[in-house]
Length: 246
Length: 355
Image 1 (cartoon, rainbow over the protein chains, first blue to last red):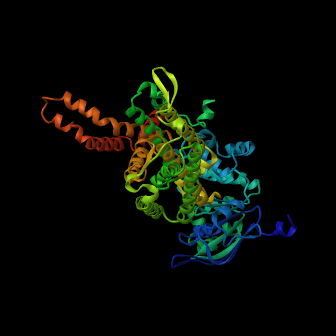
Image 2: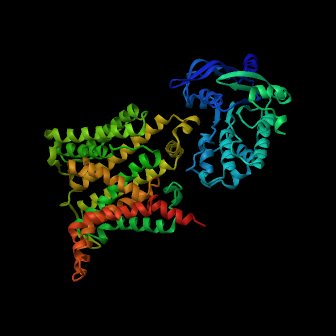
Image 3: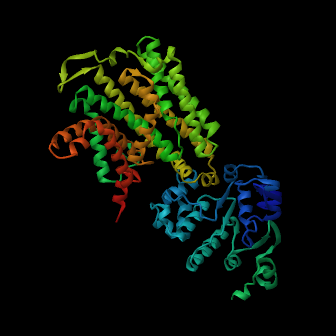
């Protein structure tokens, strides 16, 4: 890899616009996710966060602007091409295959005949439930276990970029604690991660960087620590302050 | 060894395993157990329909593709052999040409249908296949100079497969070793081999992707799979399975015609067999086809027996009159679908998995 490419962000969005039917959802979205960082994409409901992830994945195509992953333009790429480039996506509703077993879900994501044994052991360490329910139907898992499976599936092979949509949605606090530990372990592997999140405590405990969306625009980018420390900024951007909730 | 033959896909239910072994042994020894012409025809039809239904299960049960063109591919197999044997001499060469041409034609049509229409929503794909199948049925009826029209085609098989050909003077366990016996075992062996190939396909990484497409196409794409390619390949494999079944049926009957291969009634029968047996299980095709074909052929006899036995009881002999067999067949299916919504195989496996 050339030094220029190493310094270049893993993901960059430039003036990205997305229309869904007659609705204009993303209005010139601009932000970058540096290599090896965990960036949080925050914002109120309906701000366009999920649309942003889906546009990166090619599930909806940008009507204008450009999206680059690892220096490669993927603006017009089809979803399978984006995935084959090394982008893994964990959708909001977990996106597991309920009618298949836990093992089959992971094998599908590995694409090769069998996943690497060392990698699998590492995943079992992160999410012990995956090993326990290896041959169980994924549809029979609890909500937290399904979310673990969805993330395990995304990381069963090393990926360049991991896109995760609201990993804590509907999970009990104890499970969220496990999830935080798993993401910390993932961060240690220097995987580049972009997480859409509503749970600000979760975002604060993991995020290196933050981008905040409102009405289809990026209204703030910067360090997570700076936002976590500034109650007024939180209120202005997110409609609440962390201090007021504690 | 058994795991390799079954591609690691065991019945996972003792009752199901017993039923499958009984059916397999029954079909393997049918010429010796039930040597009559009618019984052997029923056994051969079971073999053909197991393959036909299994190939449809690959589409409907494993990939979630609703196609109404399966009988068209069944017909292409039958007509391919029929036309080749009737137009050329009755040799193995002509049979081979008929087989190869029908397989190639089916593959090309399935590929074209797949590439042109698998991108559209499921309901539109189903409508397209319905239209193509109806067109093919009309074509077979109108091109009577080639296809024999509504009468179909009677043809002669190579000498080794003709019923009149006797290989030995003596009988083997009381059964004459003739072309009929060879034809039956040809049908049985090819159907069994193709069934095992389909079992291998659904238990391969390719089959796993098909299951994921059935579950959620967008999620499969997000994992990097080009779903249109996979669905098109599945469509081609399903079509080839149906074509082989059509070839075998034509060989067994020494006849092909619209009613035996292209009829929409056969398409409905296939759907019922898949649903009754259990979608997405492969073994469901064995159970569904066997039950359906046996019921179709012997329910009337059973009802005649029951009707006679119930003489003197008011109303019952009339209800059980053999002429009402379709009513009882319909009721039987309603009961099956009501009590086995996941099919018989699904129900048996679920019972086994309960703690």
